[in-house]
Image (spheres, one colour):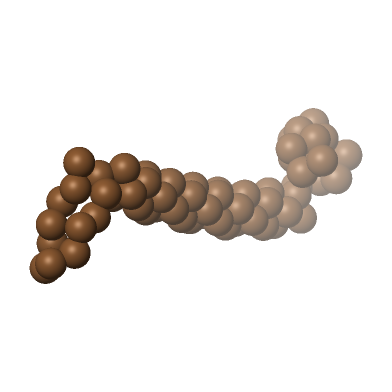
Length: 71
């Protein structure tokens, strides 16, 4: 099957290939964006836990829990 666009014949399989390639690229980009946002969230939580650890007695049960979360 051939689709005519502005005097050019484009194969249906080639169009499908291009659409799949664009879709895969979009999925990859969205996945990378999501991973970056997760990394930022982990960094923020780590910073908050570090600040919390500084504010409690280092021998307290709370400090032990916080340290275990940071490991």
